[in-house]
Length: 262
Image (cartoon, rainbow, N blue to C red; front, side, top):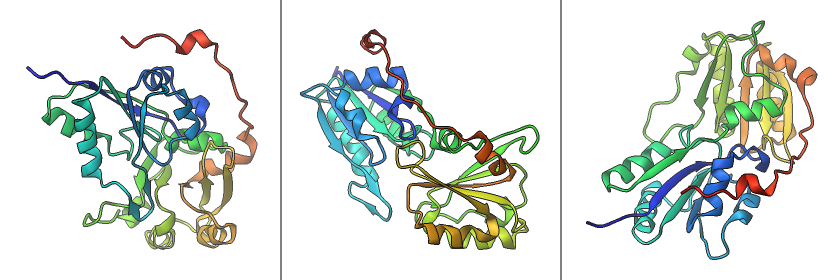
C-alpha cells in the first residue's frame, strides 16, 4: 500500500504576521514544501526550513499564473514525494480561498490532510480599521460576499442584498465597484448609508477611506484605491474614527513556537 505525506491547508491571516496562529507557525516551520499565495506576508516564509521548497502560485487580479487545477495537481504530486506539504493561503482557507476545492482533490486521491483556520480579512481587516462587524446599536448580523464570481456563474443579486439589514462586507469587489454601487442604490440602499474601503488591511501600508455609499465610487477613484481592498457598507462604519487604534508588534517567546506537530 502506497503511503503519502500530509497536506496542511494553512490560513496565513489577513496580512499582519503577528495574527498568524501558533499551529500555522508550527506547520510552516516543519514543512518540506510550501505552496503559497500572492497575499501571504513574505515575512512568514522566513520561518521555513533552509531546504524547504517554496512554490509561488499567487493569483493577480485578472491573471492566474498557475490555474487552480494545476495547484490541485501540485498538492497531489508533492504528497507522493514529501512528508509535510503546506498550502499557505491568505486569510482563512475556506473563506473565498478555494480551500474546499483543493481538499476535494486530496480526498479523491486518498491523501491525508488537515485544515488550519486563519483569521479572515473579512473580520480582522475591519477590526484593524476600527470597524466592528456587529454592534448591538447598529448591526445584529453581517453578510460577506464576493464582488467577483467565477466566470460563467451568475452575478450577485446586489439589489436583493441592498434590502438586507446589518453590515455588508464585500471582498474582491474593487474592479466591479461602479456596478456594485449602482445596483445597491437601485435596490433601495440609501445613498447616505455609511461606507468604507480598507486597502491592504492589517498591513503596514493599510489605508482606510470612510464616506457614504453615494460617494463611494468617486472617493475610491480620487484616492486611487487598488486591490486588495475590502468594501464595507453599514452603520458600524460610523464607529471607525472612535475605535481606530495603532497595532503594536508582540514578540513571542521562542519556546511557544518550537514544539513539534507530531
